[in-house]
Length: 319
Image (tube, rainbow, N blue to C red; front, side, top):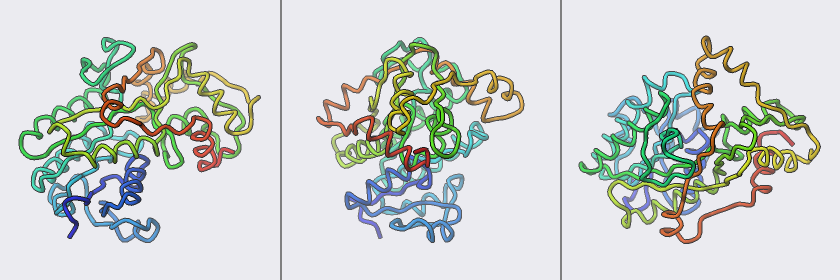
């Protein structure tokens, strides 16, 4: 039995953010369970967590796995952007049911997809959410369901952040879009319109921030939201330049991202279609204002960008 003061269930622990949060929880003395559809297989390769059999689409198995925990980390996403509309909300409903049954708080890693152009260039937690994409609309509905559930015992914490990167980030814009070629870095692609700022989040810093928040969950509102400012660049080309310097290739060419290829593939390829939907985030700045987080925590984890990129690129085999 996991004690209610330091027990967590992580759904999506094999992913970038879920795995990072699980590692931080473990390092800070939490007992961590991790849900997986093939627990025996993943248990052999992923040590340190208590892997339990279950499916995020099956509310009963999630509820069993969550017995006795005080926090459920909902970090599961359909792989490769596939079937978001059909899977994302039912998976969250399973987590909400488990949280209500066990009096647990749901921790949801949030994104900037909720916001449309009317939100402005710098957004706080209470900015209007009028997304212009299907994925953004789903994100808004996820938050609405968590807010409604907060009145039934399933308290919730949402921490929104920009594009993830880190040593275990896997499917990220950095490694899949900006430096997509395996092996030592040869070139960097910049997806952003010239002169456009962009928000980035280094996963180890984000995970540490999330765990510090849940460790003070008794001080939070039943439904609470924070923005993690992370790394903001006024021009994403500066981020591309930092990548090549961190890789030890300061003169590697920086090229425009081939959006034309994405547009051509979109009618036939779901991942390309989802990427095309999010192009607006590379055409205009959208900065997350994190004043509330800084007031609450005081000091927010912030690894120097060069160190964060070097660690990420080494782990991804790009150095």
